[in-house]
Image (cartoon, rainbow, N blue to C red; front, side):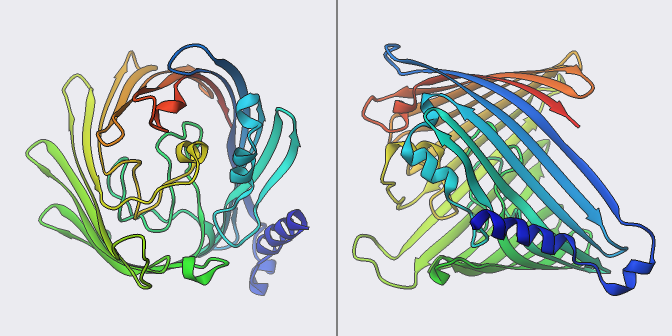
Length: 386
């Protein structure tokens, strides 16, 4: 029944055409996407247990330009996952859960080590006229500024360790934007939830002042008051960004103080050789504990709890060479957990539409930490884009 409802919603949105447009020129459809093969090999820190898994990932993006001012976008990801790592019931429950009230996530196959899952993470109507823009449906609302930790990003959850989600999750929302000019705007967004207390509604003001992009926001965040802001600019040749938010419970909870602050800042620099370096720090006050170690690693974090520790430090190095090759090295240190995360990545373009990537995720630290229990993983990616 949920699958039928999903397809009905997609068909209804795709058929929304103002009557006056039927007599005009034919509909304009465009499609892009990719097919990706991902073999994965993992082991624990003791190198006593090994696992081999595989993911076949298909991405489809559809766009329908119905007129001069409006269009419809749809994004669908379907994955076939094979291996012991995907047979965990907690993982299946996580896949089946959805990011919003629309029933757009489905388990198509769950048999032993074989799992097939499909998710519609974009499905929205976009309308724009003059200085106004309206989007209704499942979309990505990106209010974050920093590369990794985004306390201003109230609407979209994100997991830094998810190596196979370039597009990042969407959320079911209504968003209205007014552009003063190319660098300034007002933005209002509302994302309802089945439990209305878990809804998010906020307003954001963005301006440019003396070369700095500034933003302020306030709103309702899952039964909490949220107030925040951020900036992006440079000092000399050094890029400097930051954002912070304060959250306050609207209903008292006995197990914690009512308010907490989440803040992050980063600096970046591009060397003459092409090397691009980033350093970022987050302070994640009064974090919430998660119930299970498995979900801790794979579940996206949210604005009032964006890290797995009270403090985290990130560095990232990216170096392109010989045009078709690139190398990057990301690292993250969690002082409270006493865990270091290291992820080297090598990428190469094999053809105009074919890319290869090899990356590793290494969680090194105390055996008592849920993060360290993720062990060491080697992942290959072969992507054909169309």
